[in-house]
Length: 272
Image (cartoon, rainbow, N blue to C red; front, side, top):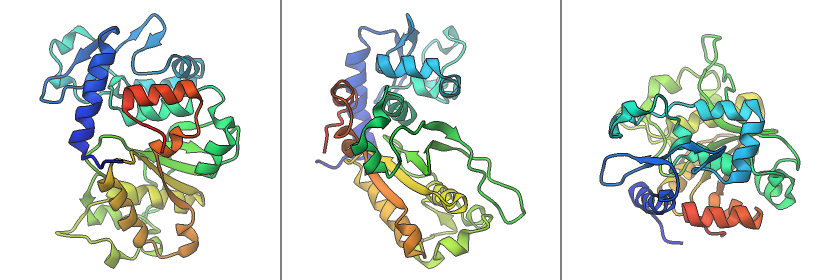
């Protein structure tokens, strides 16, 4: 599997989605690597497999995830022609990829898929979950985790440039930070934590006494390297055993043929 940078993967997904969007309602963003912004049409949506989209619309708690705001409006011509756009309308949205897979009917009855994730078959996923990770001031963190399946929290990545960095002081707010991580192993430079977003997810799993998984493209060697750097800083070996890296390509080996074909066509994700 050839490693790709975030920009190379965005370029590949842009080409695939521009071709796919020719027969679907959509908009294109400005830029050297245009993003395809799909629109709902006749109870279907170009960014989703039909079966997944029907399942999403049938569950109010899943459909609410479609309201997540798109932040790139300024890059779209005649942006005022459409009142609202969702992040999940975007052809390279990792949230849309996540829901395409895990909202597909009966997909979580697959024992192979559930074994890869370490969850029980038949569980119902939740999206945009707030784990309320405890802080030192007895308050809790209000940020979201992409998905929860049973006792597993999931962070999903696709073309993002990496994990959002943040000043060290933001990480020190967490009650369990020094219990979970060895700061000397985090390679903090200029008081900036490079994997802040990832570390925050791991802290959420620790406080909730659950497992944590990063889902990313197997071609993104940079994200995988960041994962192993974070894992190296975890003090407890028993807790490390509840942290896992799973690639979209590994997931693709465990899904039905129709979904497998969709992932290959739209995302270039080929089973490992």
